[in-house]
Amino acid sequence: MAMRPRPSWRVVPPLACAALFGSCGEQSALDPRADPAREIATLWWWMLAAAGIVAGGALFLLWVGWLRRRRPGLPLLGSNERVSNALVIVFGFGIPLAVNVVVFVVANFVVAKATDAPDPRSTPMTIEVVGHQWFWEVRYPGTTAVTANEIHIPVGTRVNVVARTGDVIHSFWVPQLNRKIDMIPGHTNRVLLEADEPGRFRGQCAEFCGAQHAHMAMYVYADPPDRFRAWLRAQSAARRAPTTPEQRRGERAFLDEACASCHTIRGTAAHGRIGPDLTHLQSRSTIAALALPNRSGELDRWVRDPQHVKPGTRMPALELSDSEFDAVLTYLESLK
Ligand code: CUA
Image (cartoon, rainbow, N blue to C red):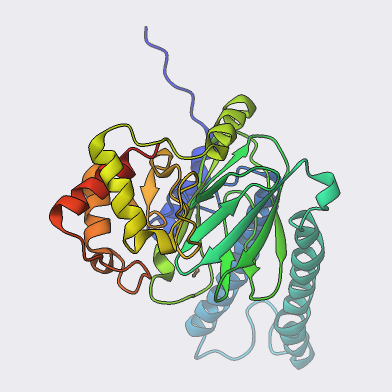
């Protein structure tokens, strides 16, 4: 007889959330995978329960009031004015005040402390994330690795994320791992990332930052330590040199045309800092801050007409001949 899979309680929060709000996918704060996110989810469920009881009680009293609209006094308690005044004070003032004080203390002291920025001395690893309109630049201090929109961290390791911005205010938020943290011009903030298990966690800019704010997403990959080290070593290397005449032609066109003034490809003369580092573009599963999957046809669409995919993006449509476009695309597809 075939074994039936055992039900997992883990599916309950996302299902409840989906039932309540229609959709909560891989980016749900109610499906936490790290201790700080669990504290936030627990607070959320307690607040939902308290608000549910209060709203239910208020609706119940309204209903009783409507049923008894033609009768004087209170059910069971009669028309004693002192009793009804006491009820108004307890339910209208005393209980709401007590609930709000408890929520204030728990949210601002207990949960705020549990999700607080880490002491950098307590974290074996630091990464720098810089928000840009509209992508995330990711640096690994102590190495030459630079990537964009896809952050890798070793699983079970406390990672200190140093958050800055290159332009306007953004907010770095990976709901399954921790709270959000603002990226403010001229200021540095920190947030802890630590995933309990390997996996991919979606994050999103959580502060309106212009036309493409919604298309400013990212992935955090929590890798087993060996895989993470191999990834970091590969990302620290210079670009894979072109091996075919078409790739060489593409690299030349990339360096001669506007591309190199905005993008960096380590190992070449391209040192632009306006757009993402493309040295290992093909190691990423998405382009344009998750706006498109990183597939040949989509990369083509993006490079030929970025304003159509992401109106307002700083990536311009380039004036290249068809054969130059093809060569540049062949070259970009070779950047493993
Ligand atoms: Cu960056 Cu919203």
